[in-house]
Image 1 (cartoon, rainbow, N blue to C red):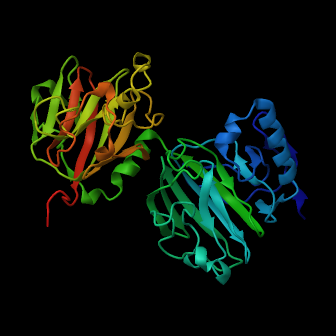
Image 2 (image 1 turned 135 degrees about the vertical axis):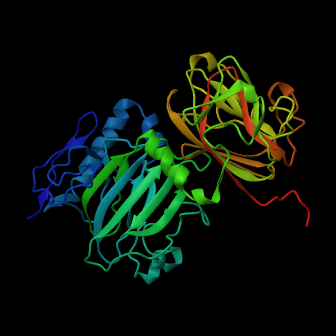
Image 3 (image 1 turned 30 degrees about the horizontal axis):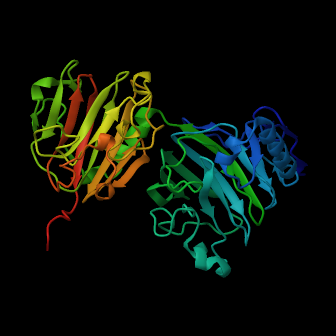
Length: 441
């Protein structure tokens, strides 16, 4: 017999009801976020912009959340350890926010239903009635699991394969999200492969660094069970990003010495299979080979207040911020000593030309993963799986301090690090060449 969930409004809005738990146990490293017996750790929210919610006065926000709870409790029940929704009402939302994590859950739905899973408060991993011809025009025939709210043509919008089971059978999702990089398996079949999940609420901004998981209700009964989450450490998150398509990349560092590098080699040292700029030293440590278009990957670790840079298409001499195509900042941006910098001087920015989005660096002393794509005049910087800069330097007309950048239009050059007296560390440095678009056919 179904029993109505009893919702309780608290500071974080949680609910509680004693019912039998599922017999299933989470895999090693995973923890249940729904225990099959209570709704502790969840609250209610419909499709609503989390940015606007955060901007509300506290009393207005509390009233709105109470309204959503009242709506949700008319439509959600628990039966035999399963969350059951009748296809209406507000969604269920975890009280906890997640940054880098894996999610496993099972769902079962009915014909003509249309649902999904919001990740970091953002729509959504799509769940379709894949047999409904009325929705073939918007992708139902392709099956569930795609990031349906990504832009048309974007990676991940449509699933790679149709992996849905027949109605009446349980389906399982396994989602890994590191930053905005999202990989999804449906019933053990890969349907989204490391795609960037877009910020539906603000297309010009990266996906939120952290956010809750939401179970969407939309058009027909849906049941959920065995909802488990494993939070990833920075090391696990970095490894996930480094390992994707790693065979296509060539290592630039042998872990032993600076073979393959040139420039201020005496100002850098190799310690514990990493490259470190010597304290009080600096200068450019550059590759011996030149690169035109490429993708560069590396891990870096900043000491408090640490400052370094990434020279792009350097001629080998001169200040890389001006003589090279650009210098991408490597900086402990949140240190108080940098509180009053120009926005084009913070981490990931093309120094003095284009500002990166802040807020995605890990704390000083932790390893970060960065991927830089250089293609013609365009530069894209991903930090810990989040796109923080996506710019075309040919479009830059406003320069910091009105100082021009004569190297901006360089089409090839050396790549490397530009030390500024701090012991910033690097490891797992690799590169993948891209077609050279500067050459005329």
